[in-house]
Length: 307
Image (tube, rainbow, N blue to C red; front, side, top):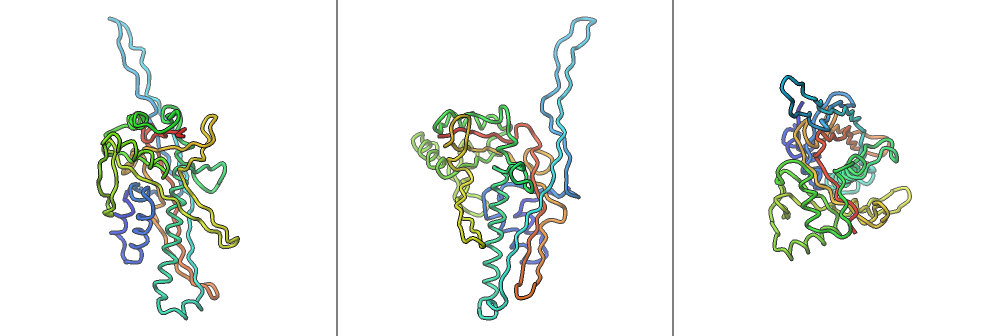
C-alpha cells in the first residue's frame, strides 16, 4: 500500500492545480506536515495491535514453562468523509480582473478549514458527539499513555512523557497550544536548553530533547448563515481533567509510514477534486475520505492536567 506525506503526494500530481491543493493542506497545520497517509481500498481498515509482549521465564529440570502468549487487540478503523466546497458567483467573476486569484483565495480558505478540522479531530475528535467524525487521541489514549502533569508544566513531566513514547526522540513530535508553549519557552530559557532548527518549509522551529516542538495555531471559524465567528484553540485551557476544569494537554506522537506507529489512512482515490456549476455559482469541491490508525500501544502520550 502506497504511503506518502502530503508534500510527497504533491510531487506526484499531474497538474499544478492538484499539486497546489496538497501543498496548501500540508502548510496549514503542523500535523499535516508530519503525518503520512496510507492508501487503502474501501472505507475501513482492520489491523492488530500487540498490547503486551509474550511471556518467557524459567523452568525446572524435566518441568514445563508456564508460557504466556502475546496479547493482541484487533481494531477496525472506519474512514470518514471530509469535504470542502468553494463556491463563487459568476457575476462576481465577470466584474473582477483577478478572477483566477479570487477563486484560488476562496479555495485556499476552504482547504485551510479542512486541514484545521482534520487536526482538531486528530486530537479532540469524539464519534459519540460527532457521529460522522473519528475519535481523536484524547479519547483513544488510556492507561500509562495518559500522564498527570499534577499542576503547572515542568520539564520533568515532559521528560517522563517523552519516555512513554517508544523510540528515539528525534522521531517524535511534541504538540502544544500557545499558552503551554509560552510556559515551555520560559522553562527552557531558564535551563539554557533551547535548540533551534527548521521545518521542511524553512520555518524556524524549536526542539526539546531532540524532539520537534509543534505549536497548534488559534484560528477563527465563521458561519456564513449566522455570521457568527468562533475562535478555535485546539489545545487551550478548557479541558476537564479529574476535578479540574481549566487544564490543557500536551501530546507527543511518533508518526509511521505504514502499519506502524501513527499513520493517516485515506481511500486509495486520494483527494478527489470536482469542478462544476449550479445555476449562477461555480464550485470547486474537494472530497477526502480519511482517518488515522494507531498501530503501536506506545505511539503517543497525553500529558494532561496542565494548569
